[in-house]
Image (cartoon, rainbow, N blue to C red):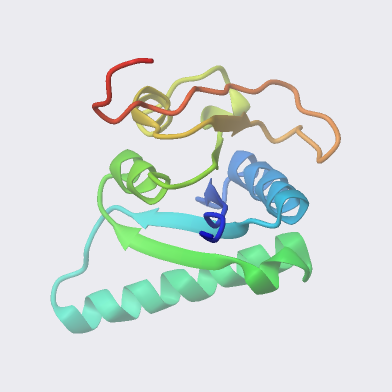
Length: 158
């Protein structure tokens, strides 16, 4: 008998109102499905030298953990795993969502229509269903969503 695969809900968090709405929805979904909540924050510019990099990563982690705690006020915040990484945000986000059951991301552009240097490639290459949140979304009401089927990852369609 094999154990069931663990469930993961990934949230891309940049501190914008849209990403905070995504965090709230992601935490609610993780609670509802008993999934691990993984919060990904991407820093674009890497400081020079290993000491500067470690300090900036630590500061980024502390900042994101404080934002998560303030947004979720306990509950899921205690179980959330925070990932702070350097690189192209779209690539880092899709990489961390490769085994996720759901990816949540903010609409970007202040909640405007689907566009943006991060959102477009995530929607194009996202490896799992994606929920796009705007700042006016609440836990019980979504203004709009986008769900994409999981990619086949090279397998022929069935």
